[in-house]
Length: 182
Length: 182
DNA sequence: AGAACTTGCAACATTGCTGTTGCATCTTGT
DNA sequence: ACAAGATGCAACAGCAATGTTGCAAGTTCT
Image (cartoon, rainbow over all chains, first blue to last red; front, side, top):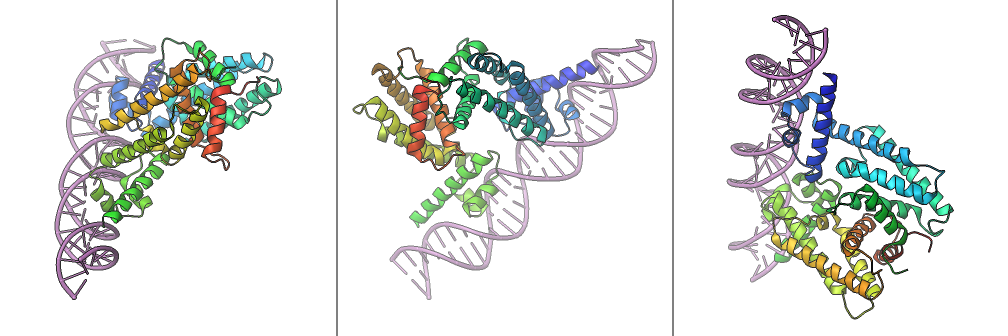
């Protein structure tokens, strides 16, 4: 029973992500339909629409943080870490792109975790700069913003059969060297 | 009379952009309030909500195309053209960021113009590559997607007092060289 | 001043979404 | 088989936004 219930919850969250990423104003009816359940069932799991969206956001945010923490390391060379973190985040971002963009939430925990990840990201780039991977003149705030934008773009791909690793390789190369002739 | 009417329309479109960029689900009431007019007045100008949003989209799209066409040239060096186009587009994007992201519209004209601009952009990067500004191995589709993403990011700035020219300089430098040590 | 036009305001109907409940049905665990 | 729980379905109330209309008041042009 319990496992069934949880499976239903997961199915609904996935459906919500899928539907809302295409149309943020989609109704509960459309989400329920995409999940293959009745609208009342959705309401039994999530008291309100906000509750559902918040749950989806919290779920994706947790996965996001896990993806970063599990692959971040200060022992490997910065370039390796950057690549691993990027690939790992992309794996989550591809499936939870909409939810991951919702940095604001009724749940303050979500904002806290996002800030935490942001700090980790800043730390990663600071180390990259100190080690000479990035130029000393690089504005780290701008670097992070560009990095987030590239992740968004890479994950929102109408792309050929590139897997997360290939996407990460291209993304990191773009971030480090751009497109200009060297 | 006529000029008053047009001024009202412009005020409403600006208010719509301002309000909807913060909250895409904002009501006509909120838009009217931001424009300093009664909700009924908005409805007299725009038959429906969709009509208003479409008008806003069409307006911004036109400005977007004008910004590109007025600064694009095949005579100046590609780097100069790239910078001018970028700065010009940013000037529009800063004020019409929400509307410019709406590439889909009931008006097929909007989609056409967007495709037109996209083609012009591709041409610009093709010339840049042929001239040696970009690497020969650069994937021009990816270049354009990154370029659009950077423009979005640069215009959505919680940024210091950088004007469009400074933003363009930083953006083009990022696009061409990234952040890596050379 | 008078005509033409625009606006604000209040009121109203309509619509679509949300959230709730009761009940029959089906599944799952024991 | 039996009990407990989950689901689908239909129905309902409530609500907020949309879109419409009539009218009085204000503005602009002649």
